Image 1 (tube, rainbow, N blue to C red):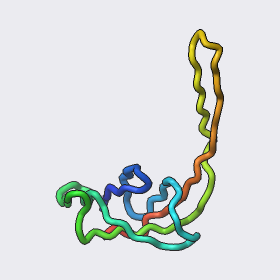
Image 2: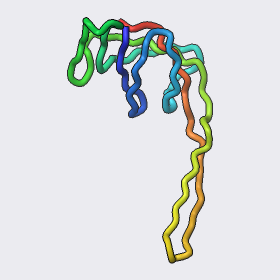
Image 3: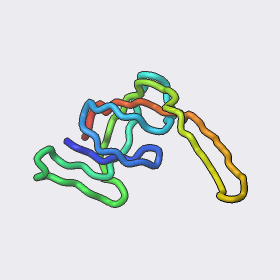
Length: 103
């Protein structure tokens, strides 16, 4: 089964046992949480479930594997001919989750 899920304002295409990095989610390590899918399809594409906004009755189980900081993101602002330049940056907080089951 393939599912499209939304976490932290981003959409991901996932299969069972996939590991993805998403924006920070509340939850302790090894905890499991459930969400509903936006779309569910079979591997061959013959069966498809789409609903607005989520597929009712769908259940995607996600397991929190790690909480960590991502790579540094640089933000550079400049205005030409004004001698203005500003360099900023931050490291986003991320959560690594594993898809346990799609139902």
